[in-house]
Length: 367
Picture 1 (tube, rainbow, N blue to C red):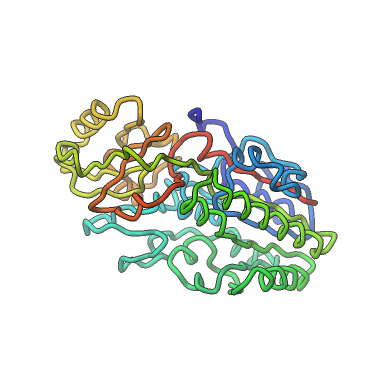
Picture 2 (cartoon, one colour):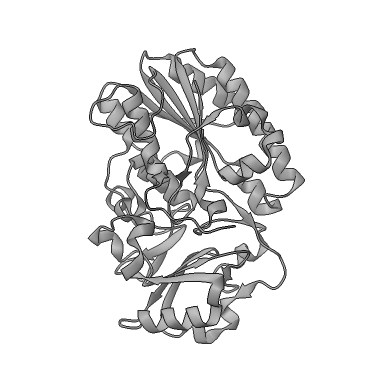
């Protein structure tokens, strides 16, 4: 696992604007050089990193046969809530403000879980930027989202996919039928669809497990079936929100066993591979130095002064949501907290950090 830089690389937030340009909507740039088409289906497979797809190409013959837009990364942190919002809005995390799996609500001292949306925060204020889908709808393109019914109206859905019809589904076969129906309903259309099972399998069993390979093969067959059912003038674009790495179950670093590291830290957030540390006023430099000295080459430690190349330009209203100190884990290391994030200690597969395996995503085009 080598370390990836983001400078000059294509990022997930360029996908939907490129799709919009490819279907002929003015004001968007096709920076990924996607093929022109009347209709697009953008299908995101949660957890399908490009490195994993290439390693297990034999289990996914359909996806492996498709053209890939090379050298696209999801952005930092490499986590679902951030990436889905970057994809949906066409802007990076420093602008849209979903800066991690969990992050601080400025002024409250509370921690927001961006998947559960467990704080009294208005998603439309927290993430005020329009989605690309709603901009497409305003331009006369039939735009829609097809996703599990349980996600209708959630905070993350409103941040990342709002402004267009949401088609809630309860099964894989229903998803196939609904995607085909909505894409056929208009001469120009863009539909977004989402698949979560691979990510869930990776977290529970690991991305090197037989169960993960079996799920990859299942999803590959389902995508091949979808391609067969779509109209001929429709491009199927398959992408992902992040990759994944497996971490050993033994000898995991529990920060709660190193109380000196939590001196001057008022709130711990993020996730195991990418921690946000919120500190007492004026303590960020000392906290960063203490963590770097303790953890050494197993992590990258940064303060606010060095984050733009990870988060992109950071809006003033977003800066307070980002940790005063950010700790990105490398190799097979992670920062666990048995007190604050006990569930993570039960997981096998992880993501969130800045390694190639976590950042690189496929952008597969089936014309």
